[in-house]
Length: 354
Figure (cartoon, rainbow, N blue to C red):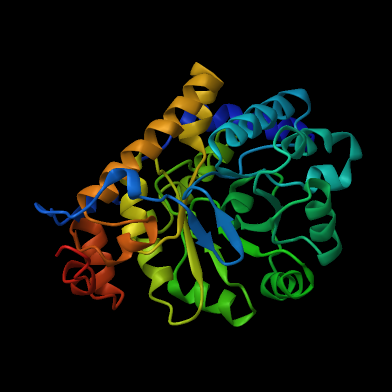
């Protein structure tokens, strides 16, 4: 099967399999503030992640490209939505465009449709420094995503089976690129040990890509003659992954993704310690089923709701959510306790107005 055909398969199966919603956000509750001294119109949604200045903590996460006209259309439509709403956007893996120049249009359309927006390039951890530079140049990208998809590769019929020297390659890319490098999981989560190892080679931004959203093990199983079911429930939930990553005592900033579907999910992710939240499957479904205008309205509504949530807990900006008390329960509470992460550090916080 060609790489471009596989890209189309991934989109179709992602829409078919949906999202599990085992992300853990139901385990997170804000402590209500009855007297918030807040003003909605004074609240800013701008966010800073390393060198990246974002007008919103919402961004359209990596999905596709390299599948001919269909993926070019999807990326163009997402880029136009990003331009209209002011959110950042990442493309899917550009390896197909590096290997086949005919596929470059399906990625370059993003910069063409959104000339002044924040755009993330994307490659897998097998990429070389030279390939990473090509990917960034292709999009005039503001940042580089390096995705980790070991489980997906193992389930993929034609996937890689040799993952040697992954950390060494990532270190080389971090050292030689002129833009920030974001290392991203694709839906199986990150442990604090993984984040610590990434930090040791210079990675300063991770996207934890937690379990609970689009399940690439299930997607690849749809393409197998015989299912490899051992990895279908594999991974660390999104909430637990955020806790893990934020517990690392090094200068690493965290992006949350993995089943985030609402402003409340995002607010909880930010309160757990993330600086932004990536949306993929939820936005893809709206775009596919309802169109661009519906997706623009969804993002605008989420911006409004997020401001209301910030007002309710007396936070002037998304960063201040990290000081607001939240209570952990269920699987997230038990995971944190077992992994040496004290839930009391979250429930006894004293943000403004508490």
